[in-house]
Image (cartoon, rainbow, N blue to C red; front, side):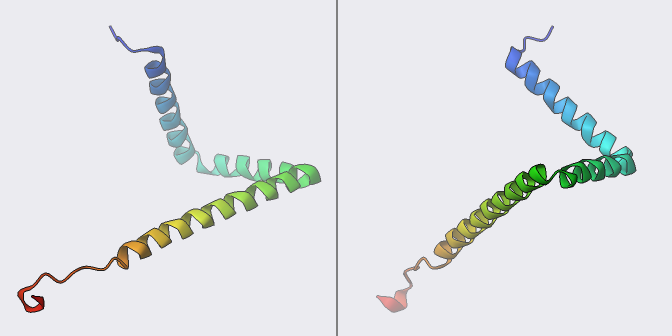
Amino acid sequence: MDNLTEDEKATKFYQKHLERMRTYSKNHREKARETSKKAYQAIKDDPEKYKLYLERRRTEYKNRKEKKKALQSTENNIDEIEVKDLSQDSI
C-alpha cells in the first residue's frame, strides 16, 4: 500500500483538513461570519482579553509594516545599482 512515513501521513491529513475547511467556509459563508462575529464579541466583552487582542494586533501590524519596509528598501537598493556602460563610445 502506501509507504508513507508518519510525518508524511500527518502532513497529507492536515492538507486535506485545510481543504475541507476552506470548502465548508465557502459553502456556509453566513454561518462562518456569524461564528466570527460571536468570537469577536466574546473577546470585546472581556476587557482583559480585548487588551491582549489589541496588543497582538498592534505587534502583527508592526511586523507587517517592518517587513514591507525591508522589502521596499531591498527593491530600492537593486534599482540604485550602477550599471557600467560597455558600449564602444566609452572606450
